Length: 388
Image (tube, rainbow, N blue to C red):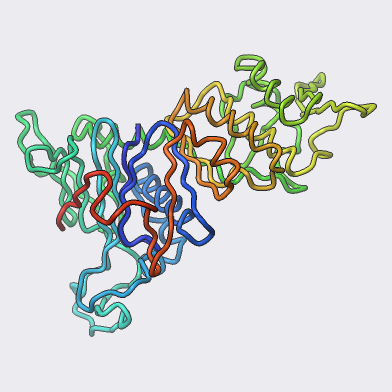
C-alpha cells in the first residue's frame, strides 16, 4: 500500500508530504493545488513504471513544471518526487542538464531567468541527478538498497555490500528504464511491478462520439479501459462473474426503478440497454445523457472483479447531478474494501459522503504555494530527501 507521497518544487507545490491510508480524499478550493498533486502522482507513476520522463516533457519540460515561486540565484534547480510503500521508499531528484558539453561549444545562456547557463540540445528537459530505494522510514547507509548518482547505479550483492551494477543508465531516464534482470535489483523490480498495478481514472469519455456508447464483443473484460471503451463487455463481466447485486443496487439507488443490462446479438456483439419507469422501450447507450452514462461507467469500474493495487479518481463527480453523489460515495467506500483509493475532488457533498471512512486532506494556497490546511511546516509524516 502507498503510505506516503512527497513532492518538492512542482508547480504550485513548494514542499508537501502527504500521509496516505486505505481511503483518501484530496480536496480544497479551486486553485489550491489539487490538480498539481494529482499530476505529480501521475508523473511519479510514469517514472517508476516506464522509466522515462516523456510525460514531463509533454507538460512543457522541467522549466514549465518547476515551482513558480521566488528562487535564490545560483541555487540548484531541482524537482523532487518520492513515495513510501509498506515495503520500501523511493525518491528521485530531477534537475537541469550539465552546464558544459564535452564538445566545448560556446556557452549559450538558455536559462537567464533561472540563473544558470545551460548547454544542451534540449536545455529545459530534465536529467536525473539521483535516485534511491531504501528499506525503512529513515534513510541511512545501512538501509539503502539501490543508489543512483549520475549515470552509475549501485546495488546490494549477495553479501549485502553496495557495489556498482553492471548496467548504467542515461541521464534523461530513470534507472527503472534499463532494469532487465530482476535478480540484480529485486527491490527495483518489485517497485516497478507495484506501480504497474496503479490505475488512474480521469478520462472516461461521455461525449456523443464516446467509445462507451458503442457495442463491443461480449468477451471477458475484467477491467474497464481508461477511456470507457468496451463498456458492454466490462459490464457483462461484472454482471456474470462479479458483484451483479451491488451493481443493480447502485443503479436503482441512482435512478429509482431503472435497470441496466446487456443485449447480445447472434454474432456475439453486446450493447448496453437501460430500462426506465414510464418508457415503452429500453434506451441504448447512444440515447443516454452524459451524467447517466458516466454513472454507469463509474459503477462498472468501481465494481470491477479485478481491482488494481491503487485506484486514483480525479474529479469523478464531473457531469453528475448532486443527487447521484451519495451512490457514488457508497461505491467508492465499497471499492476501498478491495483496494487503496485516492479521490481528488472539489465536491463538498462527495467529501462529506466519504469523510467518516476517509483520510481527508484539504489543500490550500498561501503566498502562491500549496500546503495542507492545519499542518505546519515541520508537521506531518517524517521524510528526508536524499542528497545529490
